[in-house]
Length: 101
Image (cartoon, rainbow, N blue to C red; front, side, top):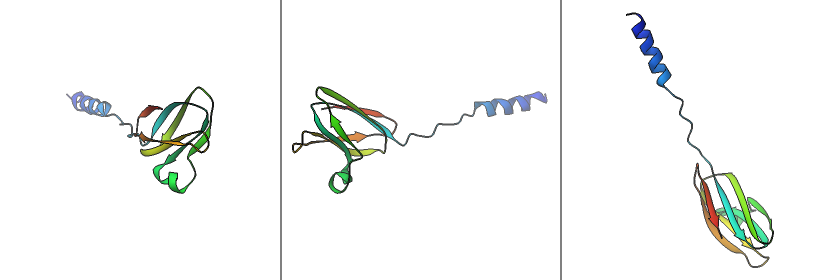
């Protein structure tokens, strides 16, 4: 009978699991066609500061991946010089969202 309490403690202790912390960041996969400049901004940085990421795309279809972004709305800017298109994209914690333009 002394084994019953010890077995119960082991069973309860073994049943506890460590919960993984909730993800705090998310990602984007953006596909688009056409050569030119691209940039990713937060809504605030579009008006006041430098891009988080920027580069030059090639002709044909381009696919970019951005990881470890804080949740919120971002602006993906693309196009040839002087003719930019702004696209609002949403980052959700724990998810990889995909957009095609």
